[in-house]
Image (cartoon, rainbow, N blue to C red; front, side, top):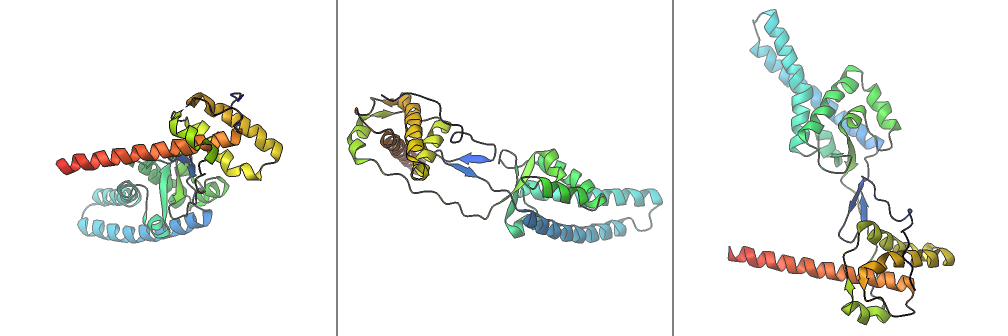
Length: 274
């Protein structure tokens, strides 16, 4: 008899930095390293200097021969364009990228890993003007150095951080269907699993070989108990909990793939008729 128990906390938690695939595999978006952020910032400083030269020269030509009030207004407008309008527009249109980030394969995202908006980009640019340009980058340097995600003060204020886009994600090979449960799985009703339960089961199967025999047995019983309410009828009497967990995951994966295939075929037929 399998007893339903809660999934151990070491297997269940999902953080705001996780994306979850259709098979309940958590994909962590790695934060950019301090060195890559520093290099990206230096490229952006160079780009800002070039922009400043162009904008100030253009403003000077337009305000040539004007009175002092117009000159001051031109300088203020130039500062706003250089330090706020240009970086905000750039990061908004590219969904989180500056020239430095484009060069190094980085991107700014929200704390929940979603794309940033114009508001996020504006807050980052506004705080960045103070911490990087007015204060010579000292607050930004120490904030990024001490932050777990390499956040500067603008990131803390905007609720963003910088990730590496160019990284290789490796996934373990899918577990095969246990032969002794293949017949049962074809006729059983396996309902969609909650993300935390599916993630715990998937992690258990992937790490089972690394556990001690006692821990492997205990966790197998616990996670099998979590899966049992979503399966009908129950597996044959005497089924090993780990075998049951593997069979449920494989069955659920095959059903999800079949459903996605049917939906894709339906979309193709609908578009072919239009």
